[in-house]
Length: 385
Image (cartoon, rainbow, N blue to C red; front, side, top):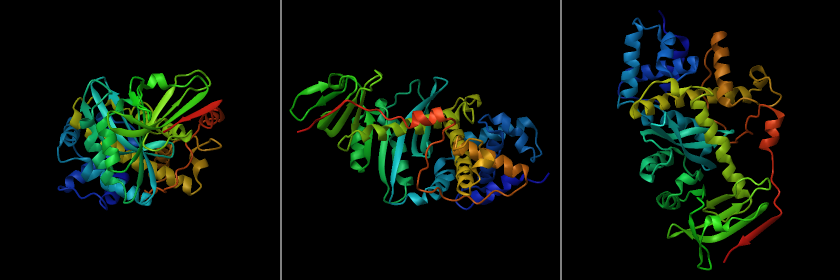
């Protein structure tokens, strides 16, 4: 049987950037990414119909797939990073917003990711799965991911990192300061803040009344870290928010931090129920899961670029019935790929992403209204030296 067309085209394109020690690894990678894109699942056994060009039985296929994801020679530095560098060429010298977060798998494994927020979703820069029974991790668990992200970004990128309160770590903030990255991290309520006056208060004691904002400049946290604090209590009576920042805080600090929610959280959902259903993989090994997520990231990135291309060429309404973009670029790309396969058309050459980030997808006018919702506060108070 002749090799499937999608596999052959992927192997040709990936060979421009990926140079493994063994060319058989590139062949296996291209086969598996093609199978992921067509089956839209992270379950290895469901890739089998798309590997039928090989003359071996299902058990032999599964053995080969298992060997691949457990192989120490298969890593992101060789197979994913070169494609990502090609994708991010347009970000040279530009601003980039990154997110740092974790997601649990079966309450046994923790997926840690550093991502680029773009187009209402996130693109993985660096990730690792560790065997860890909690979503809270230490700096040593993810410091290598920060170094990888730093090396992957184009020259001159002005980076801002967003993270939840589980990453309120002194070592993290000092690393960010050392590398001149801006940052915004949500503060825990019991974090001690030393004000310019010398008084020390817990964050919960500095929260404003409902419908107000308190901005604290030139404060000190975690013994020796000089930064700024923004605290707000929404008019609807929801929980108050406190965000630490390396830059003087304003109302825009909350807008910036809000990009985290539209970025990495839907991205984790794409790994699970929204797209690839990684929880059905049945893998229970941290190394194998890290490799599987890397393969999903390659498929994710290829589909993403196809979705962006379709929008750039004015073909959105051929794939999406919403009046405005209602599907993520991932979903648009998967639909475009299915269309190309059905029409027996070749896979377009994969082009770098444009730097300008489009508005996030919105499946309804109601969701668009929520995305555009702006809070009005009755009072904003600035506290500074």
